[in-house]
Image (cartoon, rainbow over all chains, first blue to last red; front, side, top):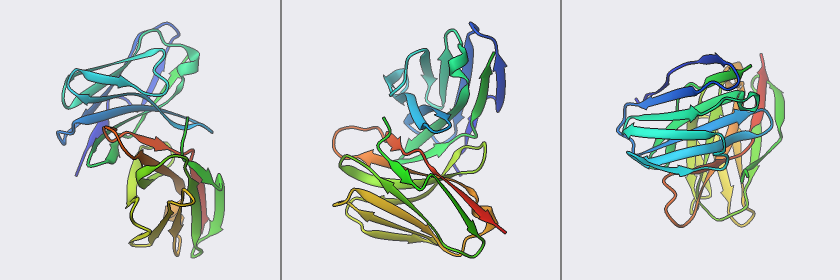
Length: 110
Length: 114
């Protein structure tokens, strides 16, 4: 079974803090994705990566950056957290077009 | 912007009834997928239908695809309380190198009452 894990289920941070969200997959997938999910807005793509050190912006990259130094790990970075980044963050990896999701990180920025 | 638009936004039924959810999309697709999300959790892939297919079954799930109308429907037969979840359609656009990038709809919240 494919397993995608995320570093935290719940996270509380203060405005201005640098926040790291980590995602690890164990299936040697090439492509990995970061989404945020907000009520009424569905899933919106922040960034994705198609290989180590390769990344592309999604629909809402502002305020975020990513890092993919190893194939199995894809990190989402909030350089300076703001209250409007309070959300559910979902990581996914994919092979053959089906996406496998982690359990999500619910981030609250105070 | 989200390509998939789902209808209804919320659906409430009794156990044993069938549940039908619809999804519309705007551009040409390679395939359309349905995912399920239990409250506060990640999404789980349910079924994939390719653009050259019209209908697909998996257990109690039946998916149809009408590319001329750019729409799909997900039918869950003989629903159970455990089917209570949010259901999302997602499309993989046709052409180009997409890296498996999907566009998700806003989801339908299904509640099945015991």
